Image (tube, rainbow, N blue to C red; front, side, top):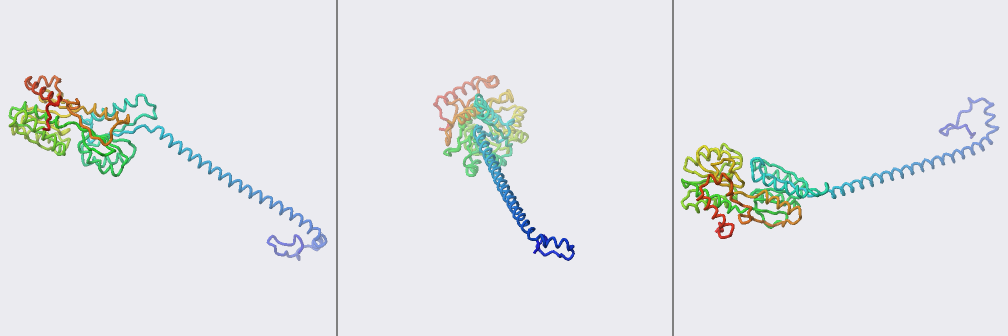
Length: 401
């Protein structure tokens, strides 16, 4: 076949339409043309192969380059992640959450807890670099106790806090499911008792002594020999310690004292507190101990209006109603929370232990130097109280016996 007489698809061209001179040229020069075309074809093939090889090489180089870039990006990403983790590890100072089972403004015992923890954290951070400082978060869970379990569980679920610090006798029971679900979560519980768990430390105040002292002055100051305790709700410490030892103190002062207890049903209803107090006063009660959070204000108002006395628990309450409030048996919650938090930050807290402090340790105290106490309570009564306190401090009297 003549070179150049084929179509691109390899089929034979129709030469009938081509002029004879041209056909003659093809025939005459076909051999030379074939040789030349063969040479050209070989050169073209060689060039094509060279180009193809070059293209393949370019593709290989491109793939190698892309692979290198991908590896570089992966290495960079890994390096960045490792660096980030390293930075987070390096700046991992202690992280503390305070769970307030109530509202700070209405609960002196919780306000003291928060203040104590804040002071310990402030002291710890004083000479620390930014990355080493302790972080503190405070959550007020509100007065609806039914919501406390979900809120404290959510706090633990974040896994952001090395320790959760709180204060309430009901907390050991509330945290039991959390300890199973989040076995690494640690708790410090004030005003509570739970021993033997390596993730929990508890400290409680000797409320046997606190209730007894409060009951004793109530019994001394009652003229009708009828006293009462108004509680927000029933719970083990109230039923087993506070009320029984308040009653025991009242009867130690005057054996025939009648002691009763009433329940508000919540920690905030001041109107209901006042209604309950009015009812008790109408039945002859002339000294009341309110342990009912915000509802206590209703009790105070009723007592002022009716001219009877109130004894106070947990903090110094004399300025709430001078002349009406005759005693304050306080817990040094701020000081104790400060010490316990500082021990945790120093790494010396004894996990699994349940401590108790009382009158002899100066963390449960009957206020004797307040001007309102001195002006309201007769000297004879104050001397009896002083003698009782001394006997407890010295160990001569164990109120539980």
